Length: 166
Image (cartoon, one colour):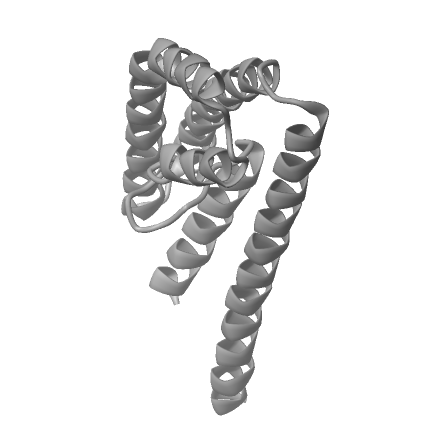
């Protein structure tokens, strides 16, 4: 039961942090691991001119090192939260403090990502901005469905096994 609680808390923290970061996903590599990949896919789909590609590359280059630092900080904060949440005995205040570290790191990551995207949008035509917004909406819908599936799987497991102890 303790492992289930830890898994549930961890999933909630990870998914909440992912939603707090514009464009960030929570795939196998951890927080923000596929952000650049998803952003690059979106840019490629926009059929940028050569000048736009060069400008986008310069903007991405400008944000790359700081983004890596922010991802590393967030990843470390999340690892600290996981370790704190799994500690025996449970120290609720320590978990709260560790979560605040994740929230602060996630906030910095979100602001960093928002600045990057805002700067990239500055080089796009109105049509490309609309296409980017459509791509983003589709990604968010896909992410929402994944989270609903994960939640329903957890609910199904609980309903199946909670009945055994009654």
